[in-house]
Image (cartoon, rainbow, N blue to C red; front, side):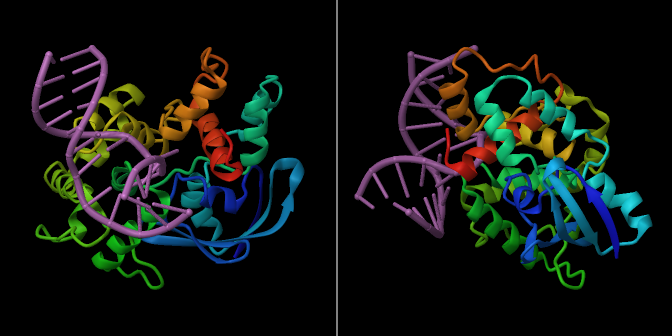
Length: 272
DNA sequence: TTACAGGTCTTGT
DNA sequence: ACAAGACCTGTA
């Protein structure tokens, strides 16, 4: 068990931000966070409003923090600087969105899990997405003692059936993606080496991955935080508040993080 | 009953 | 290149 003071981190916000689908709330202020074959139990002991974060207890060693969880929580990115940029912009809408979601960080998640999860996410709602992913992991049954790991391409048999997981028509997209993952074993090592544009083009070549999902994978799976996914909600916001154009130049290189504040605020506040 | 979910694919022009 | 329509399915 270690303790850390972390800015711009509020667990409920991350869990409800729509970037991850498997954070499990164990009790108030405590979550189980699965990544690959490991899981972290993290508890918020005390909130510090001035840094939009607080003090946290993490059930891991210092070595695990250094080698895995520090990176997962994206500790090297200065979210306060992005927040200051928004707060000093005079942009009323974005200011409100940031105040609502200032505890969100863009997690450095497992690439394969992000690819599969966001293929499932298309034309779907978050509740059903979570249900499908959990059903899938349960069916694959990679028990790590307390949770099921997310299946990599070679973790499931070639004749694995994606039926009856609540996937609807997306089942064949997953089937195809897993087949590609097995056949092109270099895929997962190749993607992270590419820049945003090139990775995006590569992802668009797969069935079931269109512009929006490709951007989500770039943003959440490859940490290209300049990627700006436009879904039905963001489109509404852009149409309603930025008909003259969104100030992309002001947030060059970090537009995806700003997008996440807007998305969260709309979910939370029911705002456009 | 219809509309909507963190859209994409296919087909017709 | 661009605009329809179709598409699984749970929830309101």
